[in-house]
Amino acid sequence: MKDDLRIRFLIVDDEQSIRKLCMTIGGSLGFHCTEAESGEAAVERLEAEAPDIVMADLKLPQMSGIDLLRHVKAALPRTEVAIMTGHGSVESAVTAMKLGAYDYIEKPFRVEALRLFLQRMAEKVRLVAENQFLRERVNAQEEFSGIVGTSAKIQDVLRVAARLRDTRTPVLITGESGTGKELVARAIHYGGPLGKMPFIAVDCGSLVPTLMESELFGYEKGAFTGAMKSKPGLFQAADGGTIFLDEIGELPLEMQAKLLRVLQEKEVRPVGSNEKVQVDVRIIAATNRDLENAYRAGVFRKDLYFRLNVVTVHMPALRERKSDIPMLVHYFLDRYAPGENIHVASEAMKAFLEYDWPGNIRELENCIARAIVLGDKKTVQATDLPPAICEAVGAPAPAAAAAAAAAAHESGSSQLQDLEYQTILRVYREAGGDKTLVGKKLGISRATLYRKLKRYGIDPKLEA
Image 1 (cartoon, rainbow, N blue to C red):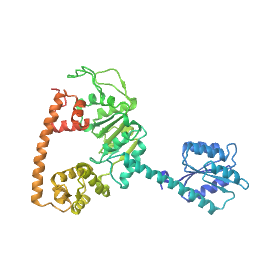
Image 2 (cartoon, helix red, strand yellow):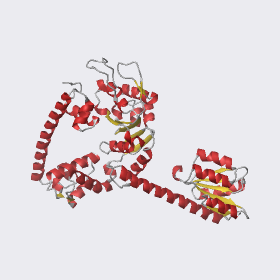
Image 3 (cartoon, rainbow, N blue to C red):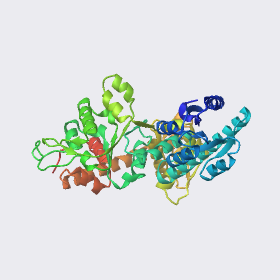
Image 4 (cartoon, rainbow, N blue to C red):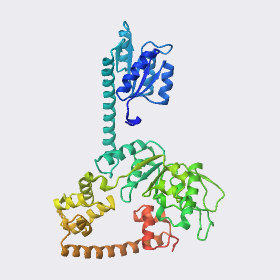
C-alpha cells in the first residue's frame, strides 16, 4: 500500500517497551508508524508529518499527555488522539475526553484489546475522510459547472481541482485535445480567491512566431514598424490573476527560455524597453503532448518542464470514461435545445457508447449540436449522427439520409464560414487591429480569436 494512503500512527511514551509494542501492532494493521519518547519530540513529529492517530501516555516528562492533546487539537483538529493511563488515573482520562480525546485505554493492556482499539480509531479516521471527500465532490460538482460526470477518473480531477483553488501553485493540465483542459483551468481560477481577478487564456499554438514576444510581454511605442503606441502584454493583463497557457508544448525553445525567466523573476520586459515590469500571476499550463518525452528529445526545456510540473492534473479521454457519456449527451441536449426535452433512441445511444471519440468531448458536443439541427427536435436517431460514427460502430446510416445530411451540413457550414469570415474581417478593421476590442465585440476569447484569424488567413498585423 502506498504511504500516502496508509493510516499515519504516532505513539508517544517514555517507555521503550510500550512504544515497541504499539508500533508492532500498528504495523500489523498496515499503519505507517512513528514514535516519540516525550511530548516535545512528538510536537516536532507533528510539524514533520501530520499523523492521523496519536496515542499518548497521560504522564509524560515535562509536557503531559493532556498538554500534548491540547497542542495536537489546536494544530491538527482532525487528528484522533487517545490517552494511555495507569490505574487510578481514569478521572484525568475522562478530562482528556472532554478536551477532545477519542478515548482512553488503561495500562497494562492486552494485545488483542489494543488491536481492536486501534482498528476502531482507524475506522473513524477513514469515515471522516470519506465524508470530507463526498462533500468536496458535491461542492465541486456545484461550483465547477460544465465539468460533467460521475466516473472515478473525472471525480479524481474534481477532487484535485477543488484543492488547488485556494493556492497559487503552478498547475500542468495534460490530456488529449477536446478533453476540457481549459474548463478545468477556469474552474480552478474562478472557484478560489483569484476568481475576481483576471483570467487570461493564451493559445500558444496560434501565436504568430514573429509577434509572440510582444503579445506575451507587451511592447513600447516605436519598438517595431507599426508600434504607434505602447501596449501591455498578456502577462501584464493577467497581473494579480491567472494566465492559462494552452498547448504550451508548441512554444519554440527561444520563447521557452524567456518564459522561464518570467516565472523565476516574476517580471517581464516589454519589447523595445530597458525597464522591467513586475507581474504577479498564477500559471496554469496545458498540453496534449508528452512534455517529459519532449524535454528528453530536446524540443522542450527541462528546467521549464519542472518549473511548470509542480502539480499535474490529467484529463482522461472520453473513451476512458464512457460511463459519463449518457450524462454528457443530455447535458449538451439541454444546452443546445433548452426546454425541448429531446430523447435519445437506443440505437443512437448505443452508437455513442461504442464509438471511441478521437475528438473527445468537443467531438461529442459537435455531434449533439448537429443532431439537433438535422433531427426532428423530439428524438435523436442513429440517422442524425455523422456517417463516420455510424460506420465506426457498424451501424451505417441509410445512404439517402447520409447524403442529404452531408449536403446540408456542407452547404450550411460553407455559408456560416463565409459569414463568420466577413464579420471578423469587418470588426477587425473597425477596431484597428486591437485584438482585445475585437474579442469583446465578437464575444469570443482572445485564444478563439487567434484560432479564427489563423483559420481564415487574416493578417494579425492588419489595422485598416
